[in-house]
Image (cartoon, rainbow, N blue to C red; front, top):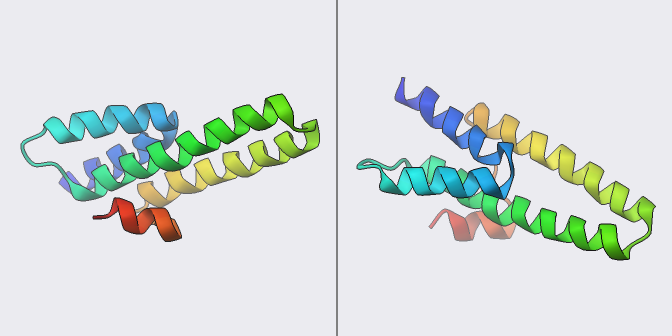
Length: 103
């Protein structure tokens, strides 16, 4: 049953972007037995979705509407993909970021 809860916490770390990543990370770090996969997903959520949010904000202000809309659509698909992967015990790691975060 512990694995099911770990997958749920991993998926939840992506639900509201970097915000839930930070919350899950803080909760997991305070536990006596933190699970490394949950910590990884929380960190990946903070880095990837936090960066995507910053880029989206900049594009929405400075770029033409079609570019901002395209980036937002890709970000939405990425967000859904990351939730799906975490919920189904598939530990997708971004090429450069994943290696740094899994240490």
